[in-house]
Image (cartoon, rainbow over all chains, first blue to last red; front, side, top):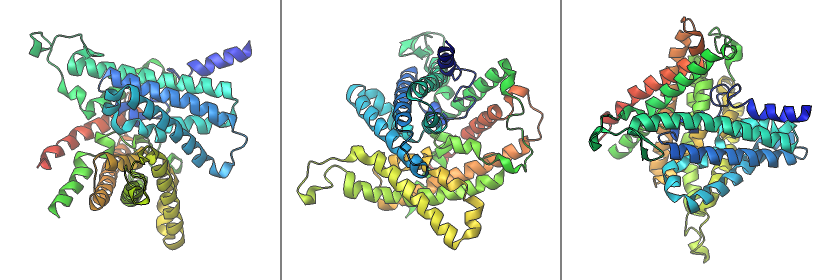
Length: 221
Length: 203
């Protein structure tokens, strides 16, 4: 029973409390770039979650055989191979979306989230736990992506997943699309606001985080 | 010549890596708490991007592009799906090499940014630079200029953010906004500012 509770915890912790994007600052590169619409955000989330779970499984299976000195290279090669597979699948079945994602699917290779989890978790844990951890982090990432994607698409174009939710002025409705929402700065603003909201609801996340004196030698990570 | 110059400006300001394409944000945020480390990171980025993008261009066109093996009687061979692994390998090797060279000949520089060099292997901006080079079909000179320009743009942005954040360390902010939240909002404002450069180099 405790084992199951442990697994459940591993799965649910990264959803909000330990969210990879808003708390661990991992994987934001892609999180912001692909959120101009819900469809791309969902595709990207699915791709990343798949890579995360599979790489966790592979690396945790061979964790006793990887020499410590070259483990980064081994991990990167494993992740890169998985990303190539995902990229080819997307190009075969979802060509249009994969064009819109442009280089960002390939960039999952260097997504700090994937390497961060394999480095800090899969390397020390058995396969099932690592896969659950990968799934949890993938879902946490997807949650943030979908939220930001929906906000940007809703206010930037008045649509959700391509459906017209708010009738725009061009079509005789009342809603004037906010073009800023489709540009880069809005992603930063929305994520900043999201972090603010989460930390206001859960004050334990704020605790002096990053509030360091400017000449603290420890703050170079 | 002026074409290359405008490509440089374009890569540095209009297509700014962290602020327009969100590439390399992890290190962009993590290392910008003050200007010193930010400057080191910027210089390291410029050096690595300036070397790896043209190098990857050579590897891509000579070995991986469709038809690259035509001289060996294999005109249909298309290895371009291997570009990810090849680029990562080149980047890792370059970073390692740069580290060794700096350690041997310029210990002072090595000491100042030796910590960040290994990190750059897994930097999205560096891999992204090479992938953009393939996607936009640059030639050798263009990819070299693009690499240096993109690195320079990253350096400018990260030093500016570092300077602002160093000041903000003394500011009295709402609890939840402190740290990460305000950093994103500042980055958003900088991104807004950088988008004004688009008009400058529009020609």
